[in-house]
Image 1 (cartoon, rainbow, N blue to C red):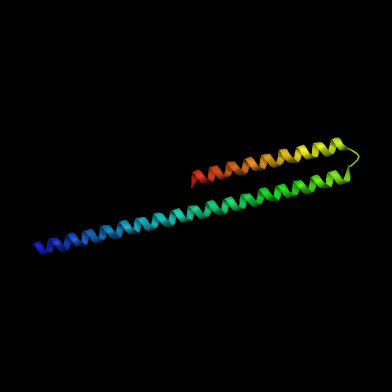
Image 2 (cartoon, helix red, strand yellow):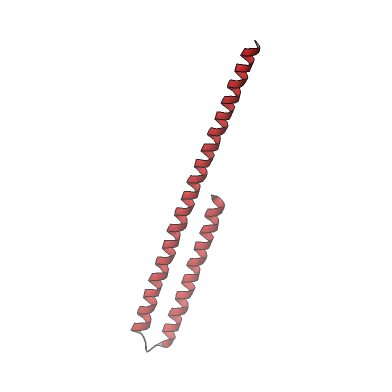
Length: 103
């Protein structure tokens, strides 16, 4: 009788340890998946920000080269480009925070 209770307690303990380990592994895998999605999103969003900056810089240089006789247009183009870059940077920073909080 006592031997049977010890065996049953051992089985219950073993099952409990196995279930705990399984839950831990599942949680670790889920966390890793969230981390990968966050890293991928951060990378992709960063690339898009850089592409936007490159396109604006190309447009700005084209404006300055094509219209050197209108310095006010060149100054406005620089201001517009800087504002657009700052807006992209802010959206990127916000997406990092939102994705980081959501992970």
